[in-house]
Length: 200
Image (cartoon, rainbow, N blue to C red; front, side):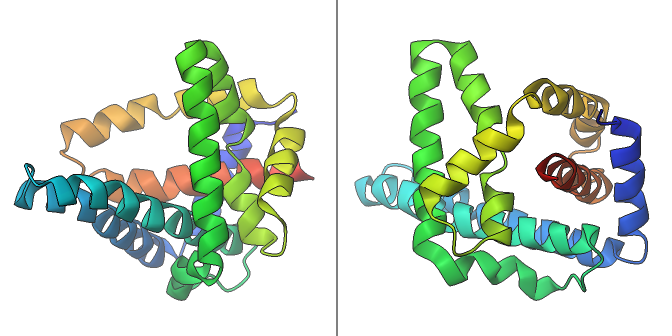
């Protein structure tokens, strides 16, 4: 049985003496992920920009997410987490892009058919980035299969865990994102502990 309170307490313990590093990771990820939005603001009418933005988003999303997962896994395992972990996903850039594209297409198709299947598929493949961060040699399809395997019987656990952060999300909105400096490292560390719990 997965205890949400235990996952959250572990996250807080792991972040002690590492808050500055974790906040730095979140800030840099946010800034880099904002690049496509900045391009839109520069020239929202440009046809070239409308084509480039999805490509840039795809290129940076997968590698950055894997790098962030790598950092928080090292944090949870107390395995010398460092800022350079953020660039880890770019070592296998094509695989990172491939898994992002494939999961996105699968969830999109599931959502178009019926909303609920799309949500189920999103939870089913929610662990692929953690798996890829720990197993850089594993193929994209095997990462998907492994995520589906370890999430079997745990989709509702993750759903409820996500719901438990709604209050924090509201606080972020009220504070115009400032609370995110605390919430996002805490949230990511908690989800990482969830992954480490179910994979074993």
